[in-house]
Length: 229
Length: 231
Image (cartoon, rainbow over all chains, first blue to last red; front, top):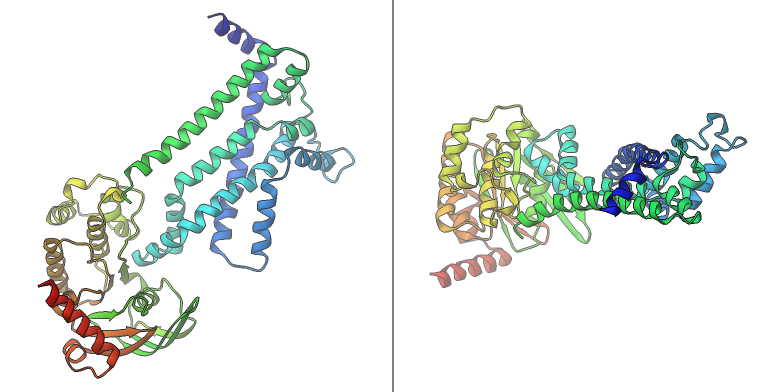
């Protein structure tokens, strides 16, 4: 009971609740935009053949492995007062952090959607042709048939967004009540030797991650269990 | 429908058909060994594949009225019912529930109406695929080995269904099958494929009994021998 009371106290403290809010706002916004970009790009890459397609796929795969802190640094250089996008005044704001997150998450979603589409879309397209579906109806059907995989890609992106430290620390600046996220708060609390709050936030992050993974897996499991191989 | 100078390269395999006429209102059989080009030709007709060279003259047939079912049919990630009504849905046709229920009952799928389609056995999936194909009343139907996993009883039902539809609406069919009795019972004409080429076309008796082509003769002898062995 003491632990629960202590946890409740931690959340009611000023700053921690804000960190949770900032984390969720940043994650939801960046994942929404990245999902739109990643799903569209993944499906377009599967459907169309054009010069430079392989290069785009390779660049995308390379971006999967790019250290977030490097992305953070690049975005920081872009958004700093003397940088090319300095006039937008996005440095040390949630919007700036969202931009960095989009650069990190979009390649993940693109890559996952592309891989699923390569395996699924040709069969769906052939089926749609034989049923007499129009081009638009075929596209809708492909997305519907890949809904589980798309959902899984979005959840993976969200998991990445809420657990990100390096880039948000650099771009957001870890400003209390404004750009401090759960992860940057944990990092700061640890450096101050305040472990209880840090661990509580860590547990909360784990709970978020668990809920998301559980939802994604149960979604997929339900269909796999029913499939007749 | 006429196919003229059709060529399609798929890896090392090439389909080369100088001329093929599929008379409308007939049941045509595509026969030949595995990898002879039957399915590829069917996919070209159904517009799933595009030819590299040549053309297919549909003679007034709308591409939406041509359909094809495969040996391992694609099942949508949804229920049996939703699968059946998909072609109606995309045509904005309201499904006739009584008609669908009667059809499902006749083909032993009624109890599984709400079941996840991918959980059906392969034979049931083939039945579902055939019903889904026929529900929107197409004018040209290609059945690519979709009758291969059916029980004798179901096979007879579908053979009768094909003949009933043929009698009522006089549509064009292409049956691809390795089962000689299906070809023999249903088809008017047969087209024999080997190594990506159409090597013989004609009335089934003419091809089965009087062909002078050694490949066709060997194939027919093997099939007849197989039939005798089964009996």
